[in-house]
Length: 195
Image (cartoon, rainbow, N blue to C red; front, side, top):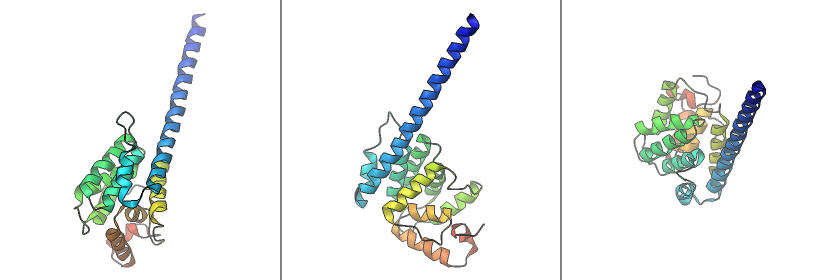
């Protein structure tokens, strides 16, 4: 008789855990969908403020923090972007590009003449060249950024695309110039080239 009680308890616990996992995944999917929608419908100068409206301390919101970081980079505020990307990775460790961007932004200078591109490339090497498209969460964020700002040039690798989409307009132009050149330091940003 006691064996059946143990089996019933184990099954009940397993069902409860499975239910929590399903609800957690559904909650995260809603966060990504909501952050994407808010980002896409907000006017460019209002995007950071719009993302902040989604931040609730009781429920960490990785995608909203990630997009806050991108809004900061649009204004060339790398230190504030570093904080936002760090919060994004803390809220959702599946956002691996948030970790890469956190470290790159911490090392990069502020302003339109920022060395962000160099820091992203260096940090990518230091992190053992991670596949920036490996995680669906990263792909969702990059697709959101692309939907909100136009397609990245087809000459870019996944790392180049991430860099271009996250950076401000002046740095985007610089990414395109660097990729068009023949300097091997920028090979990781070029499509079809394995560094």
